[in-house]
Image 1: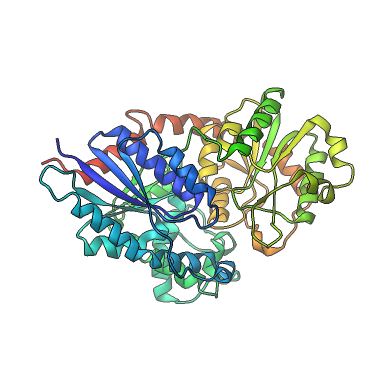
Image 2: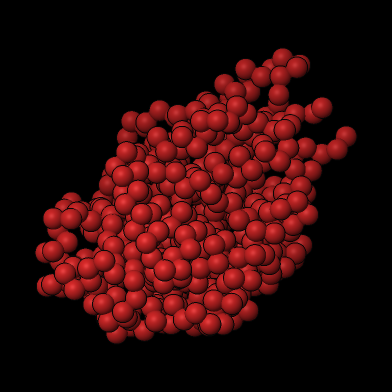
Length: 478
């Protein structure tokens, strides 16, 4: 039986790494001819995520992880504050020698006739500069996209627009006609990086220009969710696109001992709530609000009258985003008397086991930053969303959910974490009331799509079949 090993190179950020690891597990569980080696760079933001990644691999005998050594001269941190994408490009490019050395060593250790050959590299889109390594070593490259098909359509279109115009987007530019969207897309919902004049736009274009160099593109979506986008790639100019989602960490393991304590408190509180009566607010691993916005959210929750679970993160004292809220700080930033008035109707935490929370019967709605993993988790659990995008491609995701798919309630589509705007309590209250309506069309659609998402990954489902075609691409029948 012909066997094959793949080398995965994920971006060292939680949403990218976890998705890549879960896809690698899906692949080896589907076909026992595969083994996978993951090359792990040190985490860009959270050093604890490296430990978490190892815990995901603990029981997998055909999935191995190699820690790459730190680089001597990482890009300066102030560059990250000007443009995360420019920083990431330089960081990834600086790892090209380490990645080449690691793969060369793997190939030399598999030189005997009975050893398992390397069949290719599976690269996150931020790691596409590693295509040069694959080419030098005579290996094919596969792109694994942790975002959706709508975003893929944008990335495939950017090089053409750049060749014609060659400069950053402006908010005053006309709406964009993208093949992966039915409706014209406002520039305000494109990733903020396309307007970044501090190296961000140039870096993003460099990533986009490599997409079509991949032998195939693997997308964490399913055809029933984004049918129009998926069909748009059958244009004869795009590499084969395989939809293999939803790829999710269904275990939703806690990251640390303190997280496990929080989990016990959270799940105990949810167990005491009526079915579908709680709205869950969570904004990702680095989504944070300053004090004025926190107060408006609190007032909006109070006005709505709904029970709530709120994962609250505040900017850290050094300006870094995503610090967990601390009980001693809450009384200083929340409206006076808020905690007393709310009582047992609400719970505020710094971290929450998101997948487990969304699966709980008490949850009736989700105010989300619209990260792609969060969207898939919400759909999987048939929980309607209210959109509050913050960074990266989340505004485009929110636009797609509301305007294209009808799977979410619009709170905001074009909010940007860096913009300094404060969303007022009245808007928050209105969106919460809307997303918590028990007989809404959005809730009905999300329930139907949730059932489709589960069928897609079952044997005979659209994503299961697509994965089978991908496997046949990687290991052709002799």
